[in-house]
Length: 157
Image 1 (cartoon, one colour):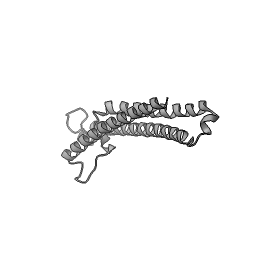
Image 2 (spheres, rainbow, N blue to C red; image 1 turned 180 degrees about the vertical axis):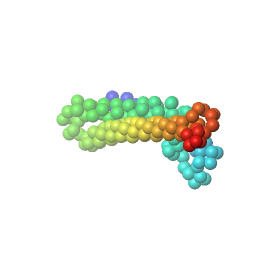
Image 3 (cartoon, one colour; image 1 turned 30 degrees about the vertical axis):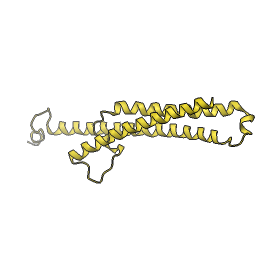
Image 4 (tube, rainbow, N blue to C red; image 1 turned 90 degrees about the vertical axis):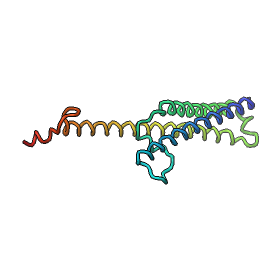
């Protein structure tokens, strides 16, 4: 049982590392785009704040992150279940508090990461919708029809 857990944690660590590399690559490309558009300065760092532009690779990155969060949740829940099933024999051994603390850490990480990522995605989605509404209203006041002349002058006459 313990050997299987070690292997699972090793696979989890490798998966997490690959996702981090993928995320870093995405952020580097977004920073490059921001620099070429003149929106980023030389001292800006790669961050997830570049999600404001049209994200392309997020369609792959976001599901991978949520799979990682599900694995964290599973690790935490299964470790707590193991502690509960082991009973008093487990708790009387030395270092018994290590496993439940690790389980709680995994649970807090999974829930916290998923909550934060979800809230950021909702916030970015609302921000994009608001920007689109403003653009539509401005184009309705200014152009009336796409590519048309200024309707504001017609209303003033």
